Image (tube, rainbow, N blue to C red; front, side):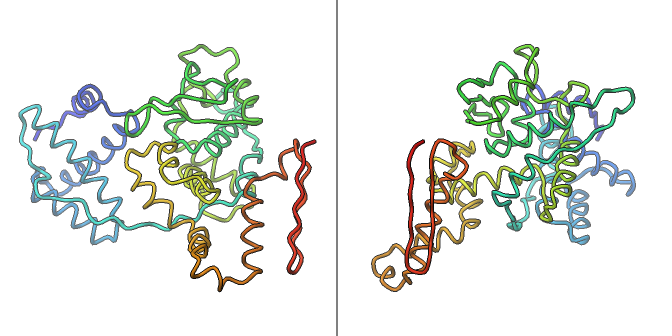
Amino acid sequence: MQYNEQDFIQYLTIRKKLSPNSIRSYRIRVNVVMNWLANNNTELTKVSFEKFLYELHQKNLGHAAINTHIQAIRQLDSFCKDRELPSGFTDGIEGLPKTRSEIIILDIDEVNRLCNIKLEYKNRNGVNCSELDFKYRTLVNFLSITGCRFEEAASLQVKRIDIANGRATLVHTKNKDNRYIYFQGPIKEDLLNITKNKEPEDLVFTNSKGNHVLPGDFNNDLKLRAKTAGITKKVYPHLLRHTWATHMYVAGVDIATLAILLGHRDVQTTFDTYVHLADETLKRASMRNPLVRQYVSPADTLQTVKDVIENLRLLQDERFEYKLNVEDNLLQFELRTK
């Protein structure tokens, strides 16, 4: 088969209407397969592709990683059928079973440290990088308080963000459905600064050259921030979304509402991804059963009430005078507006 990479990219862009990020991912993986074929002096067929996948499996590559190659060649298959080229490379080949990787989310203190840590960037190749720390730090904050995906934020245009009302409209979404995200607090002032003198069509978040933020560059920045902040957990951009969603669920947001905020068409996706991360919340919920509640220790009940109150984050809200104290068998709570 004569593979024309530029024609393939054109097909994915115009006919499949895929995002630049998805196209880049498919292009890279198709090239991996093509290089393997060249090294093995063979053509792309259903049998040769199966052998390629088998070699990946023998190298103990994770199922998710192997599946990305299947998805890429499936796109190539579609392209070849459209162009009336030899096809059928993925006929009968299904994705390998998904294995749930362990997600260790950040706690509130770690999120705050990550969002507030400052880095110093030196100028590179004659490009002024003095504002790069502020740009990336604002993006970290934005992802942490909205729960949107990295690419959704990186593709956000100035005209689609309403800073005064704390709302942005995402149009470059994974499921291609527009949705709103919401924000409040100091992030508003940061967004005003970062969008100052920009045109409506400009991107909100840019790199030092004023271009689209590259995933690899931001990932490297995030890792460095985490290390500088003394965070030992594995930190990556999508972890900010996992962390946001889990804290929302623990705080009492119902799963259906959370699915809408995350942009999941199927609430089951939200349930499967995040409910297991809130094991303590589920355990406490089960204790509300009248048949079980009588056996829950009074101390545990007091602790549950304390946790519910603390989830409101009133201590950080300067509009209230707030006191909470638990001693032995007594919980004292005072709340008044200033």
